[in-house]
Length: 343
Image (cartoon, rainbow, N blue to C red; front, side):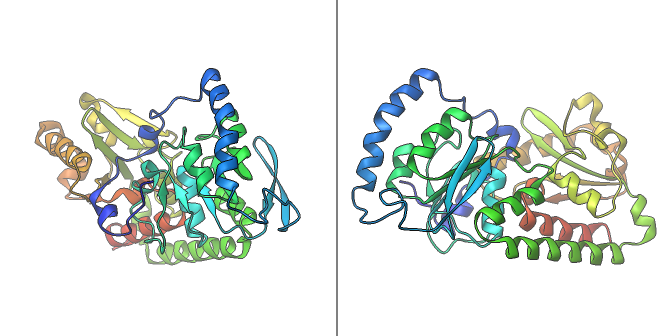
């Protein structure tokens, strides 16, 4: 098992700005592989559970549970679960924002969420979020597994549910991260914490809008990301898009309805705005270096100098929380907006 080191490992690894990359990482379980895993999983689960005395898996009456409806049916979930495994990108931030530290997740996920608080205990890396190590999960003896349909299909769910109670919601949270946090709050018996997160965020939005000059409300804010082979802009139907909309800020027409807008170098003007935020991971890893190199190549192109935001000196490089996943990231985005737009 590869533990998550709270400080050195966190800053030694970094982020490639995420969902578009993670979406290409793995294929669903094949039918043949599922059959093989089903044959072997029973042995793995039995071995992992052999050290338990009176646990939920051996004695369903030993703990109190509640029935939870989810994308693939229903599950009996323990009240106040203590050992939670998380597989979804937005799920991890929602769970940690609610004050729950999972025992395991995917390093491909938690190494991309450097804005999250340092955990008090190790978060075990269970591998690819779409094809996690079932043996490792079973050995950790979780009492609850949480995911979303974007990361866990029905075949994978069938395997995971043999290890522990598994809940898979049918939204990932790109634009519905508040709803997702509320849902996990109910599952984890953290409804009050979810309400407090929502109230605090609403108060911060109101404070931002109070400080925002009327003229600034017409400023068109563009958010972009440069990869070695790709120029992307975050449209309205993305996580940063929801924060900008809630803050009362305008968007360029090309980004008004889009999700992730792919832009060719010849159409670099499509990323332009009165203010341009460039998501640039602040790390010394190879991946982050590639992103910075891509940005420097764009800056050297004559088309970059023609952008209105560049000419106005209103290009701001920000960290990967702009491509984040929940309330923690959203509050950090508001801090950036207060610094660069409201003042």
